[in-house]
Length: 152
Image 1 (cartoon, rainbow, N blue to C red):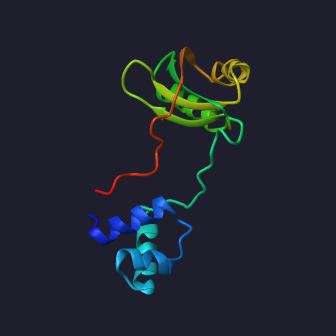
Image 2: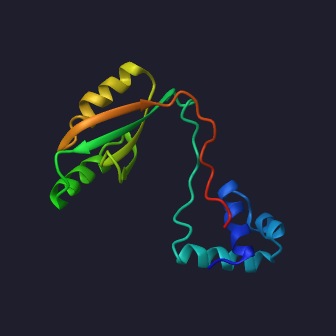
């Protein structure tokens, strides 16, 4: 699907999307105009969804990260839709994934303290519609942070 040049482009952009086109072109062996064109094609195809800054949660005061397994009272389309719509509207929910296995959803939450997480737990997660069971896990140490997809 992607040739080696596309893979190099994607790797460079994931590493640092603030590089100039000329810098990226030099690293992948293209002219700046060819590099710009290929990046545009990857954007048009939806491979590159957007560009964003990766923030350091701990430096922003979010010293604790929790993964929360949520089981719902059922799996009808309405129940799933109601839950997802509510989860999308909560800024405390950093990520939300529909899962296979014991839990229906896996939610990622960051908090400055356990007291703040308790507030999020009670007022946000437990208040989401159709919640039947919640199981929280605290991240003790991040061994490897996500830095992008591997070159394929």
